[in-house]
Length: 428
Image (cartoon, rainbow, N blue to C red; front, side):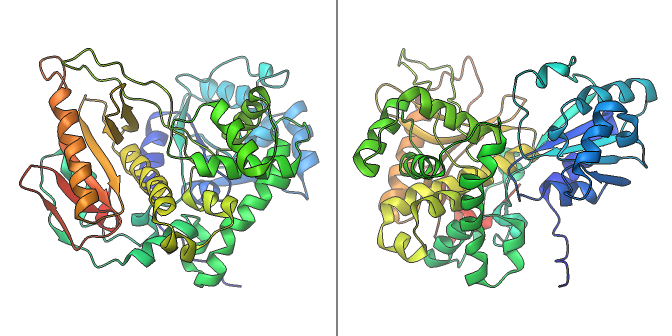
């Protein structure tokens, strides 16, 4: 079998930049999102810590003589480093004593458990080890977006102008396929299996390796299904428990749910979105609960056991899962600009699906809609209401307001100043 040609990632330039200014770079993200392959493009040598043929020897070497693991042409890639947490301090020590940047790349698809082993890492790595978060492929990276509209350009004041012919059925497929790198070059019917395989691996294997404690696969599957039904909301733990009871006929207490959700976060299956807290003209109370999201919409699709035909028949569910796809892409694009993504919701019910904010204080307000005049008008009205509530004497006005849609022939600026942009036109 011919190995697929490497598709450039937005993280390539980010990794290159970090290696120029730091002794080591830690790349984190979900399994199968392409961390190792991306790191390999810039590494001088590699050791695969979890290679079954040498795993035990690697662990012994990491414990007894870490220099054996660290020795090699730089940047030295240490893949799945977290299975030997003592390597963290070894890398930090080597960076200090070599006095050169770009020495190591660490990749891992799980966060080491904070416990006895983790305490052996006596230093945070601050000033020695930079962090880089990778996610599954955005539509621009997978070749499914034209990239005619740049998020960077929107922040620079350029108005959007592009044509998009993507059909809603194609968006449904992209939601179900997800951004797994291997799927991009596979036939469609095969590509759709990847998210199902991922879901099965999480339920039966990956979540068990987080802390060594056994977790009931059926319980994990039911919880992920419940999470999929509630993703895109600020559902508290009690709501998840109620959903499990109502839809799964299954009882879990809030404490157990939290333990399982923490495990899913540690292996980057879920990534909740924090709340944005702007300066407002009024004294409206701002809700601070996180919005719940999977790292990729296809995980929710697999958890629910549905497909693209199901989405086309249930536009409400489609809308929530499309929102997850858009949030994934916005996070990837914002990361390239050194920014992040939050959400807004206040006590009066005014919401904004995504606030893309940069380090210089610039930000853009984004509503996510499948499309159609009614939904786009509704999203634009929300954005204008929020803009008018912001105290521009104490903070900047938004750089742009955008309704991000699944379909729509044109990317353009409306008369009210709101941008309408199909997601298949967007890039970093």
